[in-house]
Every structure is written in C-alpha cells, then in structure tokens.
Length: 280
Image (cartoon, one colour):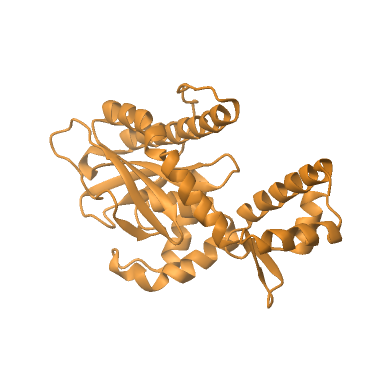
C-alpha cells in the first residue's frame, strides 16, 4: 500500500473508533457503522478486521456487534496519566467552592461505577465530607453518579441499572425502579438532586460533563447541609453546577486543541444556563 492509501485507512479507522466509542458496552453492528461512517460494508469490514488484529476492537460472534477493544482502554489509561483531569477541573471547582462556601466534588465514570477523583472544601464551618477521594460507588448513587448515569444513552443506562441493581439497597434502600425514575427526573431538570438519601441531612446537586466526542465521562457536584438548601438556594446551586460542567467541557476542548497545535489555552467564562429544579 502507498502512503496515500495508508493515510486514508488510518483516517477511516479513527472514524470507526469514534463511532464505537459512542456505542458503549453493547457495541455497534456493521450496518450501523457502515451507514454512519459513509463507508461501503466491505471497506468498513476490512478496516474493522485490522483494528481487531491490533486489539483496538472486539467482535461478538453471537450478537455480530463490534465494540472498543482492550488496547483502546489501555491507551486511555496511559493518556489520562499525562492529562490529569483534576488539573483541568480544579480552577472551576475552586471557584464554585468560593461562591457556595460548600464542598465541591469531582467524580468520573469507571465502568459501572463513579469514582471520586477530587474535592474542594468551602469555607462554611460545618463541612459535608460525604466522599473520600478514591472512593467508588455504583453509577446513580450520589448526585455526581446520577448525573452521569442520566446522561448516557437509554439502552446503556438500562444495562447499567440492571448491573448495579443488586448493590443499590445498601444506599438508602434504593431500587432499580427508583433509580430509573431519578434518571428521568434528572434529564428533565438538567441536574441531579439527592436529598437525605445516601447521607442524612445532606443535599447534593450534580451536573455531568462530556468529552470532545460527546460522551458523559464525569460530573461536578456541590454538597451542603440540607438546612442550607432551600428552594431558592437550590436553584442557584443548580445553575452554578451546570455552568461549572459546561466550563469543564470548554477546558477539555481547549486542552485537546492545545495538544493538536502545541499551544496552551486558558479557562473561559462559563455560559449562563437557566435550570428548573424540584427535590428528588
């Protein structure tokens, strides 16, 4: 193959990998990949075989679906060590903690779990330290995890709820049905609100943020004493976490662009978002 055809195959391979990244655990059939990529079936199939050989893609012979392979996961882990998401999120978290005086949390998705990656404590004398850095919970438990779960595709969300179902009763006797309903409420209001479910006397508000491919990879949340979270303040906190999540998305985009161009970027101003919230 000449250099031109090598370059074309590489570009088409990247297109397929991006499509598979949005396919989640279920993966995508060849027909869908062919249609969305604009490639003929034989071309898409040939490139997928090459990606399988490199462990970037896996093929399920029973369902005839393709999904990201183990090397894609390994490369993602390697990339995360070079571009620590905490560094991108910390300025936004610090600003949120300064404005609210409460504790701000950063959680990221890891399979069917939400992992607390960072927290920034506000100045209010009574701290709501409900999550330790490094701790894990099933997706959907806690405001950050619920925000992430509500933001994924419906079929993937149903599969996640099925998988985490057995562990839910340990968290305020939560059930799969109640979790599914909470996801619907979260999607309707734009934020996840948890009151007295996991930690008595604590209310937390979270919003998910997405990576450059549109995947919900994490969430930022604010936790405070429930007595400080009346409806008026709850709305203000909700707007703040949504702006914070959008600001983090902007930082991710700028970081990705700076990697491509070799130039640095700076934090932008968060966008203004109106949110309607009811208690869960």
